[in-house]
Length: 343
Ligand SMILES: NC(=O)c1ccc[n+]([C@@H]2O[C@H](COP(=O)([O-])OP(=O)(O)OC[C@H]3O[C@@H](n4cnc5c(N)ncnc54)[C@H](O)[C@@H]3O)[C@@H](O)[C@H]2O)c1
Image (tube, rainbow, N blue to C red):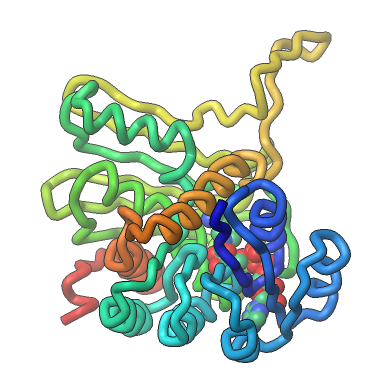
């Protein structure tokens, strides 16, 4: 079996999961190199997954790892644009975690370079598209099962666990709209078959004032209007008391599709002196672990079969554009028309 030689950059919370998947669970992948600026992360992947070639410099990995064919980028978001460009220009196929970048200028820079090197396979990781239930909803819409969708209500909600790294993430990850809602935005574009053109976002730091001091929020709500007249309502929260609670509802002319609600851990129902209940999930890993594997398997297959993925860089640019508009609307406390951001 032909195996794709892969190097990874970024070995944090999510990067380690990619190394695990690429080492053990993607049969046509060969994990040959890893890069991080943190020594302890390099030691971890060497000891745990036996990754043979380790780098503390991304440029060195691109330059020296001659047998590498593809790069998987799981660094903080502020690094994505430059790292994609460097990899594509150096001749590698690229998978990069969402979002593409934190501003529209960087997205356009990437799009231009990617267009110039169309022989390289490039993929942005919007993991929900690879979740079995989200993918099934798309199939049902395409089949016309519920008629024409006109409203999407979608939320990204994490468990109430404050950690100092989340404040750092407000800077490197662009804040709650770029980090959380970029998923919901992409779903709105995907399911409603159009692009968001106008937004109005509200929010606040209701539970953790630290997010407010960092110019961000722990809870947000936004209304969005799409070019084809459909609507989206997107919510985000960092303070769910019972666990991760990402879910989506699609309202259509002949029915509704609901994904991930209630956000239960499994099929177990507990009946005892406290009543009848089901357990929730701790983190996004619990909810999307299988989808992360399906997604990276899909990237490897696309490279080996020399096919570009369905989701384009332009789709990723559009998601960042809307996340930027939501952030501006929240900060300036007024509705924003997307066209005004790019004119
Ligand atoms: N799809 C999802 O649901 C999902 C979930 C979590 C994170 N993410 C995305 O994944 C990315 C990483 O998130 P995380 O939670 O793993 O972050 P993290 O902070 O835990 O890890 C970031 C990693 O990048 C490395 N790094 C940063 N700059 C570098 C550089 N210049 N060269 C080499 N290594 C560098 C750090 O050392 C660290 O290993 C983010 O873009 C985030 O948006 C997506």
